[in-house]
Image (cartoon, rainbow, N blue to C red; front, side, top):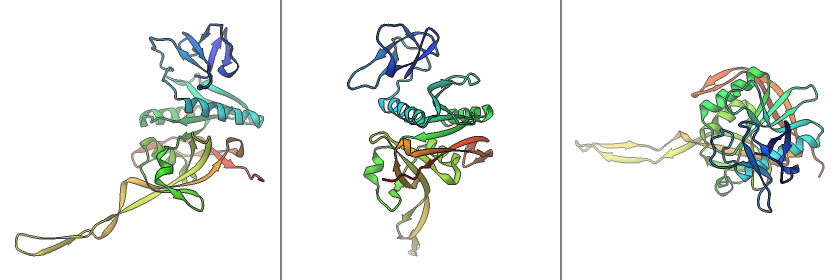
Length: 271
């Protein structure tokens, strides 16, 4: 975690000093400040660990939260890392919470590891009921760069196997697709998925009566694979935020709640 409590005040690990007894905002147990050349500054629980907030975050996830927070602050918006939403059940923290000039709350959820569909749908529904705009940003898998090739938009993967929660996030974004984050280069890409067709090889065989039969020789839609087109890349400070309203929708085994959705819009940059 990047935020701890010190005498009732939120303390950012990047500005914390060794010595004081920092505590976890969720369980109030003492946490240890971790600093070093190979790690991003963060707080960690002492074992044995029973806190639901101590989920063993990756370095990439910690870096992504700090990056988004810094970009939001840099454009003059109020923003806080690991902001606790009091009306939520369970883990109430948003990765990053920002507030628009009109004081609309905007939750950024940066998803490095897989998340259960029931959990993401429940959390998204809670944001919707609370009037909080939300955006979910999956991390790109490193295999994307091995399996794809350059294209006019940026990068194309013909056979991409999306994780279930990525299918949910893509559907939540509707026609606008979903923003994805490359942790290696700390860049953002706009991802759009389309159906992928596989070819069923033509074959022939003989029945017991000696009659020759034929099969295959056609294309069919794959249930596993999608075609993924990535447009970009963009740095965090090149992306603006647009808030829209979406209606509740169910389909393909998913449920997308009604509420406010935040979209990222590339700002025109003169290079």
